[in-house]
Image (cartoon, rainbow, N blue to C red; front, side, top):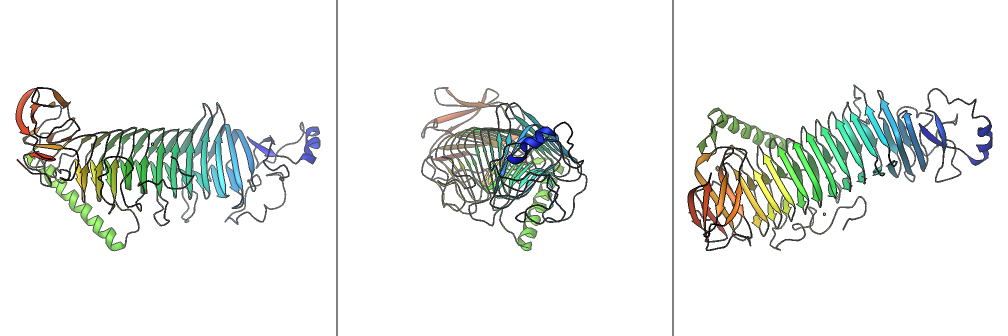
Length: 525
C-alpha cells in the first residue's frame, strides 16, 4: 500500500470524505504520507499528464507514478512502483511489510532520478516477485525485478528483510552505482543476481544469492574509475551458474565472509585485493581469475574461443586416457559513494594492494593481491589464476587445484611473489608453478613420484619432529606447494604420507623444489 503525499490545503476536506472516497481501480489504496517538500502535488491523483521534467517513456506512465523528489512509504500488497522524476530529484521509497508481484512489468522501475534510496523499515518483511515470462527485445528493457537508470542505494532497518525472486531475468540491475548498507537481502534470479553497471559497494549487510548466471556483476570498463566492487563487514552466500563475483575492473574484499557454494568461476576481475575476512570458493573452473575484461575485437574474441576449445579438447583427451598431470588417475577508509578505492587497488594505480612486504610487481595485464584473511579454494581448473601478476603478503591460503595437467593450483603469467602469510596448494604436477626467487619468504614444492589418492593425509615436520602442517586433500594430487614464515633456510624437512616418511629435503634457497613441475621457477633437486 502506497502512502501518498497530500497538499496541506486539502487535508481537512479529505478527512470529511474518508469514509466514502474510493481510489481509482488502477491505483493502489493509499494513506497520507509526508514529503520532503510540503508543497509537492498529489501523486497518482492528478487527471493531467505528469510533469514536463519527467522522461518521455515508450508507454504512458501510470497515474500513481512518482514524478518528483520526496519520501514515499509502501505497505501491504502494492502495485508495481514507477519512479519517473528528473535528474535533479532525490527520491526515497520506504518498504514496510510490502509485497509486490508483477506479471507485466518490473516490480520496481526507476526510469529517471538523481539518486534513489530504497529503505527497509524496521522489523519489516518485504517481498518482490517478477513473474514475467517474456522479454521485449529493446536495449533498455527493464529486465530485472528492481531496475534503475539512476544511482541506487538500499538501506536496511533493524530486523528488516527483502526477498527478491526474478523468474524472467535479473534480480537487481542499476545502470549506475549500487550501494547496499545494513541490509538483509535474498535474491533468486533466473539469470544474474545483482548488477551495478558502474559499481557495487556492500557494507555491513547479509546477501544470499542464487543465480543462473553471475551472482554479482559490474560491467562498465569504458569509464575510468568505474566497474569496481568493494565488500566490507558483510556476509555473502552464493550459488551461481556462471561467475560468483564478476567485477570488470577491480574487486576489494576488505572484511566479512564470502561463501561460494557453487560457481563456474569464483572471483573474476582485472584486479583483486583480499585484505581480510574469510573467503571459501568452490568453482568448476578457476577459483580466482585475473583477466583483462575490457573491450575485445571480434578477432580477440575468436582467439579466446579457440584457446578455450583447445583447452577443453586436451582435458577430454586426458580424461579419456585417465591421465592426471604426468600420472595415471584413479577415479577491509571507505571512499565516497560511487568512487573506486585508492591505495593501489585499482588497475590504473600501477602497483599492488596496500600492506604486505613491499616487494610487489608493477601492474601489467592484471593483479591478484592477498594481504590477509583466510582463503580456501576448491577448483576444477586453476586455483589461483592470474593472467598478470600475483603477490601474497599475508593471510592463510589453501588451494585444492585441478586433477588435469593443463591446469595448475597456482598459475601466474607474469610475476608471482610471496612476501608473507601461509600458502598450501595441492594439485596436479603438470603445470605446478613456483614463485619468483625475488620473493622474501621461502617456498617449498614437493612433486611426488606417484599419484596420491583423495583422503591421503600429508604432514611436514622439521628436524626435531615438530609438525609444520598437516592436511588431508579431498581430491587426488601429486604436487604440494608450501610457504610459511615458519620455514627456515638450511633446515631439513620430512614429508610424511599417512604417517609414513617418504622424503627428506633441505631448504637451500628462497624456492626449493623436489621433483619437477613443468612451470616451476625454483631450482629443482
